[in-house]
Length: 264
Image (cartoon, rainbow, N blue to C red; front, top):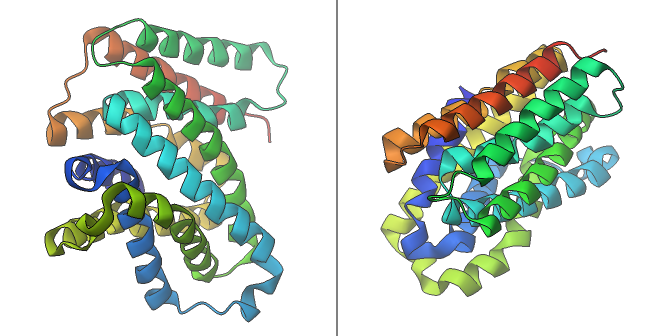
């Protein structure tokens, strides 16, 4: 549910770029998500004192990750952006391993990204670089999500982190879009994106991380690039070339394999 929600939300957000810009779309997503989460959980800073360093780090990483990802989304198709971004979670799965099998997964993922970079068409180097930067942030997000989940018992920590990320990106969005952010239909669309891209998936992911082993979570999350490609096709009409689909499958298989056979 989290995977489908976040990718359809990203596809809808891309349709806001023409009016609100990339930074404006990020601002709508994160600020409105913060408002919803604060109203939902009514967090107390005093009650979360022990988790404040993690909350701050989580919020900063969340904000930077979304700025980089939306910048990539402006330049390359959704399926390709998520596929490249997924190198971050894959790096977490492979970190510190010296097994030959994990080397094979890394080569498979690398082959997928090289294939993407050489298929031409709608793929641009700046877009790929922004996606890689978002992937690095995603790796940090995974590690911080586990820490946040272990130090908090409900969604209060997530709500406070959302406030941090919203405050971080708001100046960029205001400069990028100005008063366009206040148009009623833009706010309504932004609220839909916030719910689908942030509130619903992040809440479900934190719940999942408390309920299932990280290895199982990682295998399931490996579906992200494929679902993103399908969402891009259905919602945005972004049809990938056969070679690009092969690249997506390579990264999905590498991530699933690396996570499934990772040593605890």
